[in-house]
Amino acid sequence: MKNLVALLFLSIFVFSNLNAQRISLRNPSFEDTPAHSTTPKHWINCGTRGESPPDVFPERSPMFGVNYRPYAGNTYLGLVTRDNETWESVAANLTSPLEANVCYRFSLALARSTTYMSMSRATGRPANYTDPARLRIWGSNGNCRQEELLAESPLVEHEDWRLYTFILKPQQNSYASIILEVYYPDNILKATNGNLLLDAASAFDRLPNCELEGFTMPELSTTSEVVNISDDNTRDSRSNSEIVALKLPTATYFNNEETLRSFAANALNDLAFDDSNQLAIRQFQLAGEQQVRNGHPAWYALQHGLQFYPGRKWELVVYADDGLGSDMRVLELGRQLAGVGNISLAVSAYDAEKHDGVSWFCMSVANGLYLRSL
Image 1 (cartoon, one colour):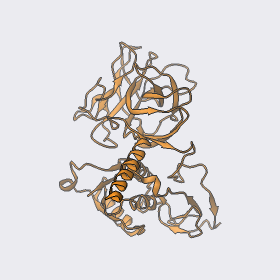
Image 2: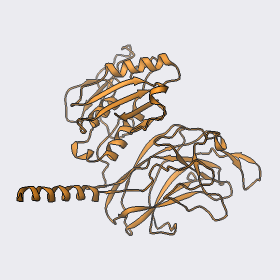
Image 3: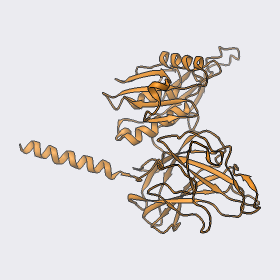
Image 4: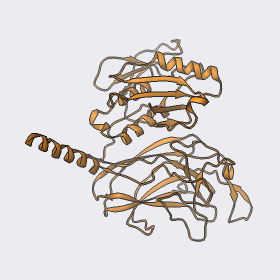
Protein backbone atom coordinates (compact mmCIF):
# COMPACT_ATOMS: atom_id res chain seq x y z
CA MET A 1 0.00 0.00 0.00
CA LYS A 2 2.85 2.37 0.89
CA ASN A 3 4.45 1.63 -2.48
CA LEU A 4 1.17 2.40 -4.23
CA VAL A 5 0.82 5.72 -2.40
CA ALA A 6 4.44 6.62 -3.18
CA LEU A 7 3.89 5.76 -6.84
CA LEU A 8 0.73 7.90 -6.90
CA PHE A 9 2.58 10.91 -5.46
CA LEU A 10 5.44 10.36 -7.88
CA SER A 11 2.98 10.29 -10.80
CA ILE A 12 1.35 13.51 -9.61
CA PHE A 13 4.77 15.14 -9.25
CA VAL A 14 5.89 14.08 -12.73
CA PHE A 15 2.59 15.21 -14.30
CA SER A 16 2.76 18.56 -12.50
CA ASN A 17 6.39 19.02 -13.47
CA LEU A 18 5.63 18.38 -17.12
CA ASN A 19 2.75 20.85 -17.04
CA ALA A 20 5.02 23.40 -15.37
CA GLN A 21 7.27 23.27 -18.41
CA ARG A 22 4.42 24.46 -20.66
CA ILE A 23 2.60 27.78 -20.65
CA SER A 24 -0.59 27.87 -22.69
CA LEU A 25 -3.04 30.24 -24.34
CA ARG A 26 -6.76 29.72 -23.83
CA ASN A 27 -7.64 30.08 -27.53
CA PRO A 28 -4.43 29.37 -29.44
CA SER A 29 -6.16 28.66 -32.77
CA PHE A 30 -8.23 31.89 -32.76
CA GLU A 31 -11.52 29.98 -32.79
CA ASP A 32 -14.71 32.06 -32.94
CA THR A 33 -17.62 32.95 -35.20
CA PRO A 34 -16.16 34.40 -38.44
CA ALA A 35 -16.79 38.14 -38.65
CA HIS A 36 -15.02 41.34 -39.62
CA SER A 37 -13.79 43.75 -36.94
CA THR A 38 -14.06 41.04 -34.29
CA THR A 39 -11.41 39.91 -31.83
CA PRO A 40 -11.59 36.13 -31.14
CA LYS A 41 -12.63 35.01 -27.66
CA HIS A 42 -9.93 35.16 -24.96
CA TRP A 43 -8.03 37.74 -27.02
CA ILE A 44 -8.33 41.53 -26.76
CA ASN A 45 -7.86 44.20 -29.42
CA CYS A 46 -4.69 46.26 -28.93
CA GLY A 47 -4.90 48.24 -32.17
CA THR A 48 -4.99 51.99 -32.57
CA ARG A 49 -8.03 53.63 -30.98
CA GLY A 50 -10.55 54.71 -33.61
CA GLU A 51 -9.50 51.97 -36.04
CA SER A 52 -11.40 48.73 -36.61
CA PRO A 53 -10.35 45.58 -34.71
CA PRO A 54 -8.88 42.51 -36.50
CA ASP A 55 -10.96 39.97 -38.45
CA VAL A 56 -11.86 36.31 -37.86
CA PHE A 57 -11.90 34.20 -41.03
CA PRO A 58 -13.24 32.41 -43.04
CA GLU A 59 -16.87 33.21 -43.84
CA ARG A 60 -19.07 31.50 -46.42
CA SER A 61 -19.01 34.69 -48.48
CA PRO A 62 -15.35 35.65 -48.19
CA MET A 63 -14.83 38.92 -46.33
CA PHE A 64 -12.43 41.23 -48.12
CA GLY A 65 -11.79 38.43 -50.63
CA VAL A 66 -9.92 36.29 -48.07
CA ASN A 67 -10.89 32.66 -48.69
CA TYR A 68 -8.09 30.55 -47.20
CA ARG A 69 -8.85 27.32 -45.40
CA PRO A 70 -7.73 27.32 -41.75
CA TYR A 71 -4.37 25.79 -40.96
CA ALA A 72 -5.98 24.14 -37.92
CA GLY A 73 -9.42 24.15 -36.37
CA ASN A 74 -12.23 26.16 -37.96
CA THR A 75 -11.10 29.80 -37.98
CA TYR A 76 -8.00 31.99 -38.06
CA LEU A 77 -7.04 35.61 -37.43
CA GLY A 78 -6.34 38.39 -39.95
CA LEU A 79 -4.24 41.44 -39.03
CA VAL A 80 -3.46 44.41 -41.29
CA THR A 81 -1.03 47.31 -41.56
CA ARG A 82 -2.46 50.54 -42.99
CA ASP A 83 -1.19 53.39 -45.12
CA ASN A 84 -2.16 55.92 -42.41
CA GLU A 85 0.58 54.60 -40.09
CA THR A 86 -1.65 52.38 -37.96
CA TRP A 87 -1.56 48.62 -37.57
CA GLU A 88 -3.38 45.85 -35.72
CA SER A 89 -2.44 43.72 -32.73
CA VAL A 90 -4.07 41.41 -30.19
CA ALA A 91 -3.17 40.31 -26.66
CA ALA A 92 -3.97 37.28 -24.51
CA ASN A 93 -3.23 36.20 -20.95
CA LEU A 94 -1.04 33.15 -20.33
CA THR A 95 -1.80 30.28 -17.94
CA SER A 96 1.36 31.28 -16.04
CA PRO A 97 3.96 34.00 -16.64
CA LEU A 98 6.94 33.71 -18.95
CA GLU A 99 9.86 33.94 -16.52
CA ALA A 100 12.77 36.30 -16.97
CA ASN A 101 16.00 34.71 -18.26
CA VAL A 102 14.23 31.47 -19.20
CA CYS A 103 14.12 30.14 -22.76
CA TYR A 104 10.86 29.08 -24.43
CA ARG A 105 9.87 27.57 -27.75
CA PHE A 106 6.76 28.98 -29.44
CA SER A 107 5.33 28.38 -32.90
CA LEU A 108 2.39 29.46 -35.03
CA ALA A 109 1.32 29.31 -38.68
CA LEU A 110 1.55 32.42 -40.85
CA ALA A 111 0.46 33.30 -44.39
CA ARG A 112 -0.20 36.36 -46.55
CA SER A 113 -3.51 36.55 -48.39
CA THR A 114 -3.29 37.57 -52.05
CA THR A 115 -6.57 39.47 -51.67
CA TYR A 116 -7.62 41.66 -48.72
CA MET A 117 -9.87 44.44 -50.06
CA SER A 118 -10.86 47.30 -47.80
CA MET A 119 -11.04 51.11 -47.74
CA SER A 120 -7.84 53.09 -47.41
CA ARG A 121 -8.10 55.54 -44.52
CA ALA A 122 -5.41 57.68 -46.15
CA THR A 123 -7.05 58.03 -49.59
CA GLY A 124 -10.70 57.19 -48.91
CA ARG A 125 -10.63 54.73 -51.81
CA PRO A 126 -10.73 50.92 -52.03
CA ALA A 127 -7.30 49.31 -51.61
CA ASN A 128 -5.92 45.78 -51.65
CA TYR A 129 -4.05 45.23 -48.38
CA THR A 130 -1.52 42.73 -49.74
CA ASP A 131 1.89 44.24 -49.05
CA PRO A 132 4.16 41.88 -47.07
CA ALA A 133 4.31 42.34 -43.32
CA ARG A 134 5.92 40.66 -40.35
CA LEU A 135 4.88 39.48 -36.91
CA ARG A 136 6.22 40.93 -33.68
CA ILE A 137 5.75 39.18 -30.32
CA TRP A 138 5.77 41.36 -27.22
CA GLY A 139 5.89 40.53 -23.53
CA SER A 140 3.26 42.40 -21.53
CA ASN A 141 1.71 42.58 -18.09
CA GLY A 142 -1.68 43.86 -19.17
CA ASN A 143 -3.48 46.82 -20.74
CA CYS A 144 -1.80 46.22 -24.12
CA ARG A 145 1.51 47.61 -22.83
CA GLN A 146 4.38 46.57 -25.07
CA GLU A 147 7.07 46.04 -22.46
CA GLU A 148 9.67 43.89 -24.26
CA LEU A 149 10.02 42.73 -27.86
CA LEU A 150 10.57 38.97 -27.51
CA ALA A 151 10.74 37.89 -31.16
CA GLU A 152 9.81 38.88 -34.69
CA SER A 153 9.35 36.96 -37.89
CA PRO A 154 11.05 37.61 -41.19
CA LEU A 155 8.94 39.36 -43.81
CA VAL A 156 6.05 37.04 -44.70
CA GLU A 157 5.74 37.15 -48.47
CA HIS A 158 4.51 33.59 -49.14
CA GLU A 159 0.85 32.86 -49.85
CA ASP A 160 0.69 29.39 -48.28
CA TRP A 161 0.51 28.51 -44.61
CA ARG A 162 3.93 27.94 -43.06
CA LEU A 163 4.81 27.07 -39.49
CA TYR A 164 7.25 29.46 -37.78
CA THR A 165 9.16 28.52 -34.64
CA PHE A 166 10.54 31.18 -32.28
CA ILE A 167 12.91 30.90 -29.34
CA LEU A 168 12.03 33.51 -26.70
CA LYS A 169 14.00 34.65 -23.66
CA PRO A 170 12.48 37.48 -21.60
CA GLN A 171 15.30 39.53 -20.08
CA GLN A 172 13.76 42.63 -18.54
CA ASN A 173 10.89 41.08 -16.59
CA SER A 174 8.44 38.18 -16.32
CA TYR A 175 5.28 38.55 -18.42
CA ALA A 176 1.74 37.39 -17.75
CA SER A 177 0.48 38.05 -21.29
CA ILE A 178 1.72 38.35 -24.86
CA ILE A 179 0.89 40.71 -27.72
CA LEU A 180 0.90 39.55 -31.34
CA GLU A 181 1.41 42.52 -33.64
CA VAL A 182 1.58 42.88 -37.42
CA TYR A 183 4.18 45.43 -38.51
CA TYR A 184 5.76 47.00 -41.59
CA PRO A 185 8.90 45.84 -43.39
CA ASP A 186 12.20 47.40 -42.36
CA ASN A 187 13.38 50.56 -44.12
CA ILE A 188 10.05 51.44 -45.76
CA LEU A 189 9.70 54.97 -47.14
CA LYS A 190 6.00 55.21 -46.36
CA ALA A 191 3.36 53.16 -44.54
CA THR A 192 1.92 50.29 -46.58
CA ASN A 193 -1.35 48.35 -46.69
CA GLY A 194 -0.38 44.79 -45.74
CA ASN A 195 -1.89 41.70 -44.13
CA LEU A 196 -0.90 38.70 -42.09
CA LEU A 197 -2.97 35.57 -41.37
CA LEU A 198 -2.33 33.74 -38.09
CA ASP A 199 -3.38 30.29 -36.89
CA ALA A 200 -2.40 27.37 -34.63
CA ALA A 201 -0.36 29.09 -31.94
CA SER A 202 1.41 26.55 -29.74
CA ALA A 203 2.04 26.52 -26.03
CA PHE A 204 5.28 28.04 -24.74
CA ASP A 205 7.60 25.11 -24.01
CA ARG A 206 10.37 25.75 -21.52
CA LEU A 207 13.85 24.87 -22.81
CA PRO A 208 17.07 24.13 -20.93
CA ASN A 209 18.86 26.63 -23.19
CA CYS A 210 18.13 28.90 -26.13
CA GLU A 211 19.54 26.67 -28.84
CA LEU A 212 16.78 25.44 -31.16
CA GLU A 213 16.44 21.80 -30.16
CA GLY A 214 14.71 18.98 -31.93
CA PHE A 215 13.32 18.86 -35.44
CA THR A 216 15.66 20.30 -38.06
CA MET A 217 14.61 20.00 -41.68
CA PRO A 218 17.20 20.62 -44.40
CA GLU A 219 14.94 23.20 -46.07
CA LEU A 220 14.72 25.22 -42.86
CA SER A 221 18.21 24.78 -41.48
CA THR A 222 21.39 26.59 -42.38
CA THR A 223 23.52 24.20 -40.34
CA SER A 224 22.63 20.85 -41.93
CA GLU A 225 25.70 19.12 -43.23
CA VAL A 226 25.63 18.47 -46.99
CA VAL A 227 27.96 15.86 -48.51
CA ASN A 228 28.53 15.49 -52.26
CA ILE A 229 28.58 11.87 -53.37
CA SER A 230 28.39 12.20 -57.15
CA ASP A 231 29.45 14.53 -59.94
CA ASP A 232 27.24 12.78 -62.49
CA ASN A 233 24.93 15.38 -64.01
CA THR A 234 23.04 12.75 -66.00
CA ARG A 235 21.73 10.84 -63.00
CA ASP A 236 18.12 9.69 -62.74
CA SER A 237 15.73 12.57 -62.00
CA ARG A 238 14.47 10.84 -58.86
CA SER A 239 17.92 10.67 -57.27
CA ASN A 240 19.87 13.46 -55.62
CA SER A 241 23.61 14.14 -55.66
CA GLU A 242 23.52 15.36 -52.06
CA ILE A 243 23.00 13.55 -48.81
CA VAL A 244 21.36 15.82 -46.27
CA ALA A 245 21.96 15.29 -42.56
CA LEU A 246 18.70 15.14 -40.62
CA LYS A 247 18.64 15.78 -36.88
CA LEU A 248 15.61 14.32 -35.10
CA PRO A 249 14.53 14.81 -31.46
CA THR A 250 14.54 12.07 -28.86
CA ALA A 251 11.57 10.67 -26.92
CA THR A 252 11.70 13.36 -24.21
CA TYR A 253 10.89 16.01 -26.83
CA PHE A 254 7.46 14.41 -27.40
CA ASN A 255 6.20 14.62 -23.82
CA ASN A 256 2.85 16.13 -24.84
CA GLU A 257 0.50 16.22 -27.81
CA GLU A 258 1.01 19.90 -28.60
CA THR A 259 4.70 19.28 -29.25
CA LEU A 260 3.83 16.35 -31.50
CA ARG A 261 1.20 18.47 -33.28
CA SER A 262 3.70 21.23 -34.10
CA PHE A 263 6.33 18.71 -35.13
CA ALA A 264 3.91 16.81 -37.40
CA ALA A 265 2.58 20.02 -38.99
CA ASN A 266 6.16 21.09 -39.68
CA ALA A 267 6.86 17.74 -41.35
CA LEU A 268 3.71 17.92 -43.52
CA ASN A 269 4.61 21.46 -44.59
CA ASP A 270 8.05 20.28 -45.71
CA LEU A 271 6.88 17.27 -47.71
CA ALA A 272 7.54 18.00 -51.38
CA PHE A 273 6.36 16.20 -54.51
CA ASP A 274 7.73 16.59 -58.02
CA ASP A 275 5.67 17.08 -61.18
CA SER A 276 5.04 13.33 -61.43
CA ASN A 277 3.62 13.26 -57.87
CA GLN A 278 6.61 11.42 -56.46
CA LEU A 279 8.57 12.48 -53.39
CA ALA A 280 11.15 15.02 -54.46
CA ILE A 281 14.09 14.34 -52.11
CA ARG A 282 15.48 10.83 -52.21
CA GLN A 283 18.53 10.52 -49.95
CA PHE A 284 19.26 11.58 -46.39
CA GLN A 285 21.32 10.56 -43.39
CA LEU A 286 20.30 10.63 -39.74
CA ALA A 287 22.72 12.65 -37.62
CA GLY A 288 25.32 10.32 -36.13
CA GLU A 289 24.63 7.47 -38.58
CA GLN A 290 26.59 6.23 -41.58
CA GLN A 291 23.58 4.65 -43.30
CA VAL A 292 22.19 6.52 -46.31
CA ARG A 293 18.41 6.30 -46.51
CA ASN A 294 16.10 6.77 -49.49
CA GLY A 295 12.87 8.76 -49.35
CA HIS A 296 11.86 12.22 -48.24
CA PRO A 297 13.31 13.33 -44.86
CA ALA A 298 10.04 14.91 -43.76
CA TRP A 299 8.11 11.70 -44.42
CA TYR A 300 10.59 9.77 -42.29
CA ALA A 301 10.47 12.50 -39.62
CA LEU A 302 6.68 12.30 -39.36
CA GLN A 303 6.82 8.56 -38.72
CA HIS A 304 9.63 9.13 -36.22
CA GLY A 305 7.41 11.46 -34.19
CA LEU A 306 4.32 9.23 -34.29
CA GLN A 307 6.23 6.24 -32.88
CA PHE A 308 6.36 7.89 -29.46
CA TYR A 309 2.58 7.53 -29.10
CA PRO A 310 2.26 3.73 -29.35
CA GLY A 311 -1.21 2.28 -29.63
CA ARG A 312 -2.55 5.28 -31.54
CA LYS A 313 -3.91 4.80 -35.06
CA TRP A 314 -3.34 7.54 -37.61
CA GLU A 315 -4.69 8.39 -41.04
CA LEU A 316 -2.98 10.74 -43.47
CA VAL A 317 -5.46 12.07 -46.02
CA VAL A 318 -4.20 13.39 -49.36
CA TYR A 319 -6.15 16.02 -51.28
CA ALA A 320 -5.32 17.18 -54.81
CA ASP A 321 -7.29 19.13 -57.40
CA ASP A 322 -7.36 16.09 -59.68
CA GLY A 323 -8.20 12.60 -58.45
CA LEU A 324 -5.39 10.95 -60.38
CA GLY A 325 -2.74 13.14 -58.75
CA SER A 326 -4.22 12.39 -55.35
CA ASP A 327 -4.19 8.64 -55.97
CA MET A 328 -0.59 8.75 -57.22
CA ARG A 329 0.54 10.58 -54.10
CA VAL A 330 -1.25 8.05 -51.91
CA LEU A 331 0.58 5.22 -53.67
CA GLU A 332 3.91 7.04 -53.43
CA LEU A 333 3.56 7.71 -49.70
CA GLY A 334 2.47 4.10 -49.14
CA ARG A 335 5.54 2.82 -50.94
CA GLN A 336 7.77 5.04 -48.84
CA LEU A 337 6.43 4.03 -45.44
CA ALA A 338 9.68 3.42 -43.59
CA GLY A 339 8.42 1.17 -40.82
CA VAL A 340 9.76 3.47 -38.13
CA GLY A 341 8.87 2.08 -34.71
CA ASN A 342 5.55 0.48 -33.95
CA ILE A 343 3.09 2.85 -35.63
CA SER A 344 -0.24 2.35 -37.36
CA LEU A 345 -0.37 4.88 -40.19
CA ALA A 346 -2.77 4.57 -43.14
CA VAL A 347 -2.61 6.81 -46.21
CA SER A 348 -5.80 7.49 -48.15
CA ALA A 349 -7.25 9.89 -50.70
CA TYR A 350 -9.73 12.54 -49.62
CA ASP A 351 -13.34 11.35 -49.66
CA ALA A 352 -15.99 14.02 -49.05
CA GLU A 353 -18.47 11.60 -47.46
CA LYS A 354 -15.85 10.24 -45.08
CA HIS A 355 -13.72 13.28 -44.35
CA ASP A 356 -15.95 16.39 -44.44
CA GLY A 357 -16.27 17.80 -40.94
CA VAL A 358 -13.37 15.76 -39.56
CA SER A 359 -11.36 17.32 -36.74
CA TRP A 360 -7.75 17.17 -37.95
CA PHE A 361 -4.81 16.63 -35.64
CA CYS A 362 -2.73 18.86 -37.92
CA MET A 363 -2.53 19.71 -41.61
CA SER A 364 -0.67 21.37 -44.44
CA VAL A 365 -3.26 23.09 -46.61
CA ALA A 366 -0.58 24.10 -49.11
CA ASN A 367 0.45 20.47 -49.66
CA GLY A 368 -3.06 19.00 -49.37
CA LEU A 369 -2.05 16.75 -46.44
CA TYR A 370 -4.33 16.20 -43.43
CA LEU A 371 -3.45 14.04 -40.41
CA ARG A 372 -5.97 12.70 -37.94
CA SER A 373 -5.95 10.35 -34.98
CA LEU A 374 -8.50 7.56 -35.38
